[in-house]
Length: 98
Image (cartoon, rainbow, N blue to C red):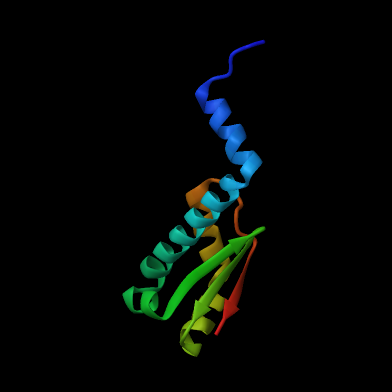
């Protein structure tokens, strides 16, 4: 029997329990909210918030129709910025609530 490193054991355990996806989802939502503030301004952070990520779809709640239209028209660039932060394609499309 060979010895496994603690890193390998922790990684396997996270995969088995589905924790890795939960952590990634939390990171994606956090980064998306940061981008909303940086890209669309501090007022946008009050009126729009990423709330959920799953299987490449990021759900964004928007309280203002004008902001919804602005985010929707620039969603390709928003997705590109977000994916660049992860050096991987984690978001394929946005879905809007509100």
